[in-house]
Length: 634
Image 1: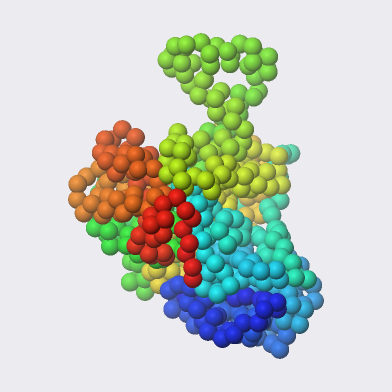
Image 2: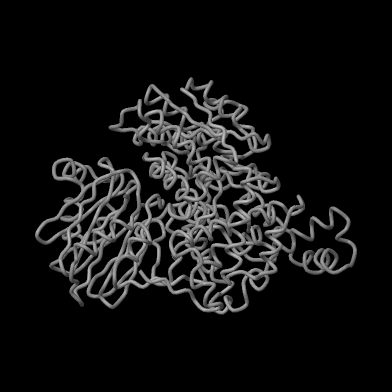
């Protein structure tokens, strides 16, 4: 069991409060084999389920507090008090004195919950980059129910759990249910660096921190490079502080970030045990680059080759491990790396996630910036000559340069950040063509874009690049990649930390102006220059890849893997969620034309079906009551 859960409600006393809290704690799932600490009375309950190195609790007469993860105090006096009294007690006492300003004093990858039973207030928060998760519900005025997993929240008897049509639609856009939605209508998720507070009978959800971006102005590139290198090294050092380095391992894909983490692990720890995944499909196999990094840093390196049979052994567990539908197929190699590490005595894995979202490494950054260069042309030239010629004259789009210009113009006319959605998995498909007509009634096709705009324009910067980075810290990283790696490590029975997301690294990255980070549309240029004498040149110059599973290739071949996926799709077809003609196209598709799009959809729908089977029932009310909202009562 991993995480925090609890409630506070002075409007209606609860009977059997400890039983309720025990059920909520069970909803946190099977994780790292840690101890469970609970405290409950008729008006409040608070539980922490955690590995001993990730747990701190305090239950006084008035104040209750729990902290999960690896907190880092930002002031020496609080750090000294925490060493003497314990982190949770310091959080409790500080909250009583300064309220939510306590969140300015504590950082690091952690979540916390504190309840003041005398003042009838509560504060729940997650870390600044969203390594931790937190869901919450407000079943009645003056009541707050919260938990690190949706299953913990729905275990409270006051919380109903109705499948959200909107969340399913958003899931099909990005193969995850992005914050602030959850898969259940009655629950919400906190964005990174956000808190929820119950005070004076009212609920307030608010940010408490954000990156201070430097968008322009003179920059000392050499000083920034030195600060970046130092911050990365410090991030790795903090991640292994108080750890037995012999029981620390690192993911090594052969990319920039995992190679950086593996190299600094050897430098600061004196030992580096690295693990990589390979496939028998050449286009997906990068073990040679991982080996280059292992050779460079003299790591103790292990390779694991994953087959379709390995994927089949893991896939049935997906629906239960994830408390919401989750369609990122690279969870399979992430798990097998962690599993091999655990079998070899590793207790803590270091992962390189976060570098792309801090230092400009995702392809869509340069794609969007390139499209935006069209804006530099005089407006009259664009409107009077280029656009009429490229968009309206029949046949000209068949000429390659004109066709390319037309695509750029069409994309430019979609404002940011909605333009990014054009690159989604279901680009080109309408909601009407994907979903059953009765299911569509509760869907707002623009709903996902609203949240995307909030995260994009919420950046403290006018620069497009930094706004995209700010957006991706939530939607690519916190909602997706971190969920993938963290849950797979938990399933394997080990902990994971993310040195690239150390707060010193995050703050340094914000000081790098866009034209320094990606000059002349050169993806990840500043980082590559900074690390050029540390990483092998082959890794500096190679194309971006990562632990990508050859799902599409395996789906094209007859065999148990394809049979299992098709069986899951056939089951989902009966639920009345998706249009049957659409499902038939996904199920029967065997051509390599559009294989990526339809293969990705097949995996996403399978993941949804497995989640429904694991958390609802094999064929729930979604099909039995065609067109009505599925009621799922806990």
